[in-house]
Length: 217
Length: 217
Image (cartoon, rainbow over all chains, first blue to last red; front, side):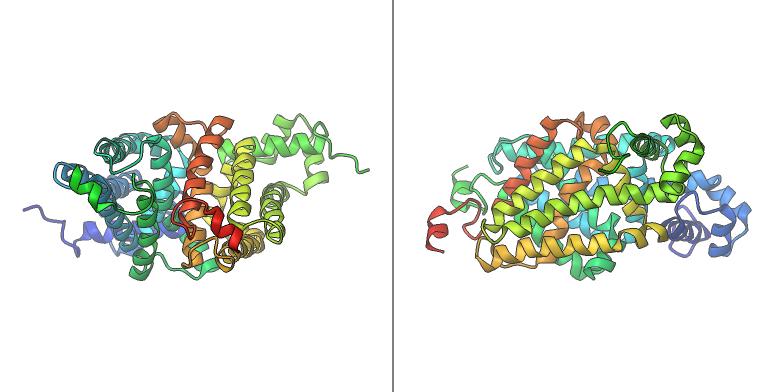
């Protein structure tokens, strides 16, 4: 069993301090010294575990995308047994809940992705290609088994991605202008209903599950 | 007639140079000297027209949001004569087309909004409150005249805003991962169809315009 992976380890304390500071002040606005101060460790400990600030940035992306992609992969695997629209809905719910529970990390990640620095692009290009692959699978299978009407998949993925990420990227705006709190479970629950409705729209029966059709297929 | 408002004026040349540099290198990564060099003017000319870099930032927000809000306001005004779902669709189309034609400015604006610096927040808070007001009007009127099913408006606005802004904010990602080009009219046309479908979903008749109902009301 590896040490340093429990929630109270110095490694985890450094990681959590970095997420919180990157969230508040951005990557460029945070120093290794700031992180060491917040995590109550010696800066050398950060070098030991993460080889410095860029290592921490990579750890943020890894932690976020490996979990995020796992939710998609689980549902792509489930396509063998379960209808595509249900798999898609389950992936959506898991991703919303995960982002809500990790709202600081999520906001930081999506903000960095939108900035498109060279460093970030190198780290994430393989993650984004995998995301594309899994999302395409979910929609394509839905069209093959006729759960979904035929339409250009890329536009659907962009719509879905927009809806999944925007509330977490613009969480400050949501709080200030709309008095909505994406970090609360209530938000996830309500917002999920709206995306669920949108998925229903994609379905061949124009807006709701057609159980008769399902029985025939 | 005011001078300095035609497309070839020094003022406009400075503005366009600033947008292009802010887009490529961000606000912090761009100096007044860079802008002067690109616009082929003396740095003093920038001070004269915009009082420096922050004045240019404010000019970017003003140019973007005044046009953006005008599209929403026109359709809110049209609610007296035209059904709310049609007004909403027209606003969506105008906003997508405007962002596509001004894709560098749009991306820069949405990126700055997501960063939530204190400066930006002060500039934009009144714009975002107006945006909220107009979007609420469009959905509320749709529910009053029963074009739309009753449901929480704030969640609908967040969904709509997500879909309107994300492709322009993440344009690099769209180009690299999806080979889609938000600055092309083809994109606007196709993507609009998807949002149009989403608006149809909101309608009381579950997915498509019910002309009989319209006649009765």
